[in-house]
Length: 454
Image 1: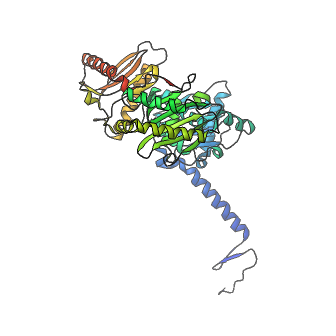
Image 2 (image 1 turned 90 degrees about the vertical axis):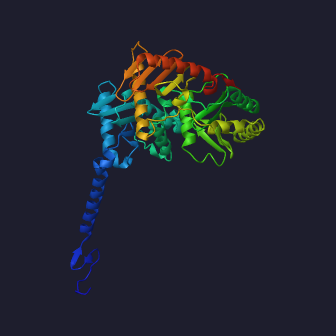
Image 3 (image 1 turned 120 degrees about the horizontal axis):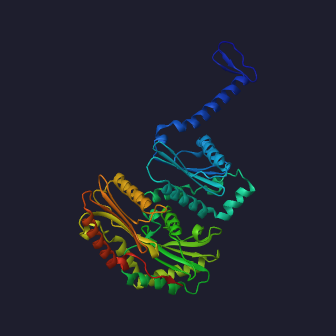
């Protein structure tokens, strides 16, 4: 060194100032402390705090599993608080359901070794928040099965479940966006691709003829654009809408199914939460956007189902069904204004016996994303009101500042209608009668009313 200062072992020299090993160790400790402080500071970051809704998943031991916004590792303290709240109430032989703090609602759902928490400023009901949490839980079970989920925590209570869920976060992310934009989750129903019933019957019969000799094939499901085209099933089994939503989410959140045939395990929580089914998943062809899922309980059926899929495609092409599917997909969507029913801006109709629904394409004044979210929120409130526990009145008419809402629940159907704000009760009743007549006329095209079995 130019000043003649000598460096001895374990000592670094900067200018005329020397650093000993103890000093370097102290700096490393301070650096680690600063890093921890930065991690904790995420709770103070305005962007994070201002999110309208947070979703968290943790184990009963307080181990982080999932956070919709922000890294779980930077929210360890928050996860600990949530676990403490649940445990404190459990110690009193009770269950925590929700907390209201000003305009913030916190909903809890405990499912075995898993705790799910929703923190929302959206004004939605606790029931709707818990329904969304239930779908998130179902998504976790779909990836792992309830058997595996229970076993890992029985063997090790503080197990980090992220090790098994790695790569599945996108499924949960997509599902959350799905539940917040699609009314089917609220209604417990699926939407079908509108087409002539005769065309749908030909498609179903083609699948039956191509797969009737395949053992252990439980379901054949054809979907496109988040809509159901047909389901063919073993006679003694049924497919719940909640399981169909999980299937829709899996297909729509992955691009890997498009270029090639896939063989994937999938657990359908409502059908059987304890075990996987094995699915052959593929799009029909490059010139048809429909996705076919063949679900079997036999893990060694890939090649048999691959052959069956090709047979199905060949037959569908020969009987012009592929062309019919494409026509249905590209046909302009019906808007409420196309029905020429005065005062009706939008509506949702659920056919109860088949758990299917239909609603027209959104149009003015619901063009912007914010307005579409607001409308769905209004439907959620209306649905919650008309389904309120102990309520005997099944017809609700609400005149709000910007629209009038009507909800009607019968044994055969549920109907939720948005009118212009100045509509009278008499005009609304006349519109409802016209709407029901139109639905009756179109039901064969909008819904799958006949069961198809292998």
